[in-house]
Length: 155
Image (cartoon, rainbow, N blue to C red; front, side):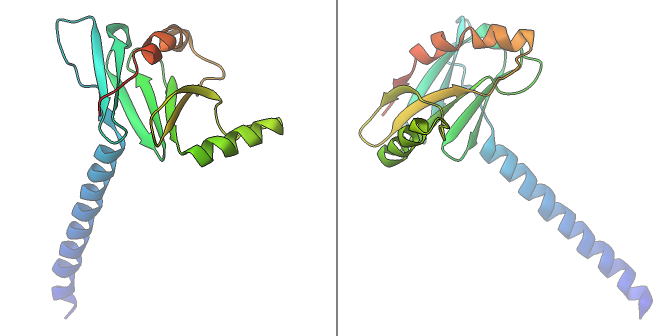
């Protein structure tokens, strides 16, 4: 009886490992999206967000740009930085924005108060995750205003 349990346990463990690996790949792909390069000869790259219907243009100095969604925030990182995300865009409902403004009156805002733009249902604001930036991150952070000024709705 014990001899037949060995192969069964091995098969169960193999199936479990495959399920976990597949789930990890799925989670990673859902939480990381790459910039869509609209023209490889261009000096810029375009990131499109289908969920919120907007796009941003990044300079080539950012190298490969990654965008990771975390709830209602999209964090942007550059392959030409030592580590970490450079900035984020947050998509808020009108009520969440009002709550954020109220919390700022207490001196401890619950979110970044840098309004970017809005559409009929969502207010977009931005912030930086950098408190002690590395030199390469500082260079990228200096380009953020240019990137934010390229924000446009696609739908």
